[in-house]
Image 1 (cartoon, one colour):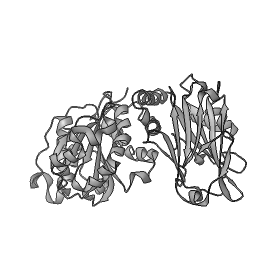
Image 2: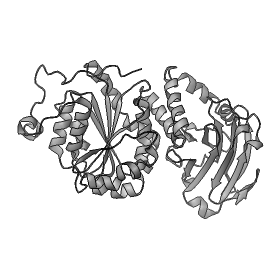
Image 3: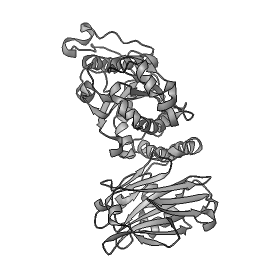
Image 4: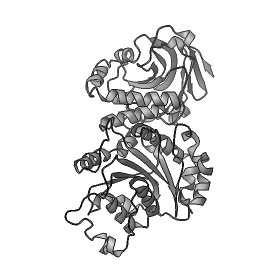
Length: 451
């Protein structure tokens, strides 16, 4: 059903009760951000936690959630879960301040809620930098949809003033140090030019990088993917490709080569081609014959984390870890690994950030512990991520792993990636990496990791 400017209609109770998807499809020669403002009965943004945009991808209880790994701007809504003080949701589109263009140069913008479609084009505007596209609002106990397409000359700033959020831009401008800004803009621009469908992810990653003071850090990024048989459904459902999409912006930021060096593992390990701008989109289904071929190549009947951990260590350090025999591991792995006067095994070099995906079923616990201990002398940080599985064994107990030269690993698990916002995922990925960088540098294990 096509809607006309100014039209309003009541949503039926069945539509309101279900999870709603609002999609904004924009065609323009520049990037446009789409945001959702949760307003009170006075039309004001009385709680800035209900402004959902690239910098804050979900409301407190995820009643409003911006999906970042889809081509269009898509919001998932749970209207019955919204607090009573949220009376209206306004969807607005704004041109990135880095651009000089106006909405006159807009190709088209299509707002879609179920069967309801509202379309705009550049012919509807002149010098505006932002548009209030549509709104969902409460009236007489019902939720209603209204579309208006009202433009604002001042862009996002004008919208914030209009909704009573005038102080927010000033706080955002003064809080960060001036230096980080170019790095984040650079990341966004690279994705805008080469992978526009991931611009939202790049923005969210940039915010997390700034928050963790990683904007200037340069590192190699390794991506290790579980290709055991228990992962089959996650590959089929596209969840592993979602992980690739979310991790890729970190590879682009940290590594000047704009690439993720990638491995798949089962009983064996296989190094794949790097994830790049040229192949990320269909990486899981196309690279080296696709995920099903990976499973055959690595013998997917079992998990063998040590085999890929060894390969990654040797690839980046040039050193082959010794076999984890009784002399190396000691009784239950408790033998003192680093004698008095111990020094790092290799010359200091640029850091390596390993993102290691597993769905559990870990059995080689002693050897994993041995290898992580042994690798604690190297400029490699291991971020293990459990996805949709169980039985993570030694991976889940890395914080308790003693006898290391430096704390070089972290672990967290997520039952379903769709249940966690992109902002939270990036924050958790980078929670301990900054602390490791600081300590590794103090021990002369890494050099020249900032630009």
